[in-house]
Length: 256
Ligand code: T3D
Image (cartoon, rainbow, N blue to C red; front, side, top):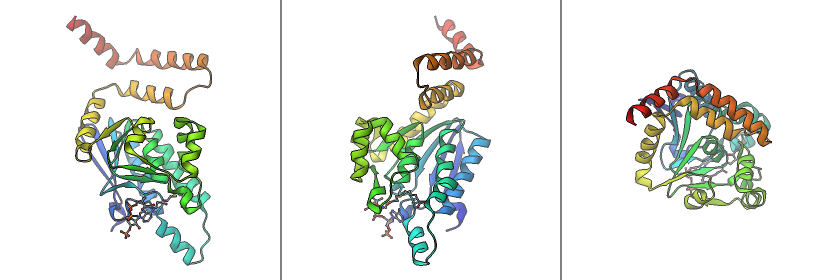
């Protein structure tokens, strides 16, 4: 398989699909694939669609780090430097996803394990297929959560529940993920793409400026309400000057 085939990007009508493409390994990430993913995210940043859908080809979303790559290193007697792996590629992927100038939508088509969960949760919105799962696989191989998973789960689920799940390497089903707010929509397996397209089209009619301002306010909230009120006022001040807002006011009054 050529390097270029490990991450696909299809564009059209303001919506781009980024597909992780190592289906025979449930889209587990090798170092080369993470570099390719970073390059693809840079290309998206340079020429952003309105909505980026992130999904996996085949029956998995992303099984996290490719364990075969690490085993190969162990068997060759090479030094394993997981810190460097995270600093050099995983962390930049998570940061890049969270900072793209487009709305990001994870279409979790199958299992997301380890850092695959980090990729899914780095997106603005997650839609899960009914049979998809989030496998907190880190502990099973003697690792702690990375790719932002410890931070996101503790923030979303509370420290006690998140810790219990991570310590027991739990597998979270789609319905449970929905009820805990890790995913915002559940789709029957054969309806996932249809529902993703419907949501992406709806999002693409919105104001990208307002959507990105909303992400900034929600993803990086101020510690104190007073500071957040100031930031909301600043964001709203800028949005009030956009053509999108002013055109919407005109259409609203034309209908009245
Ligand atoms: O290393 C660093 O840089 C540090 C960063 C670490 C971040 C991490 O992500 S750590 C966590 C790594 N991921 C895992 O530990 C998950 C390992 N995989 C699994 O536990 C299971 O495969 C799944 C729960 C994901 C799915 O189970 P199942 O039964 O649906 O599928 P399967 O039969 O286990 O897997 C299908 C194939 O994919 C299989 O290959 P085969 O037998 O058909 O040739 C399996 O070996 C392969 N596969 C699945 N996950 C990985 C993988 N190959 C390499 N790496 C994987 N992570």
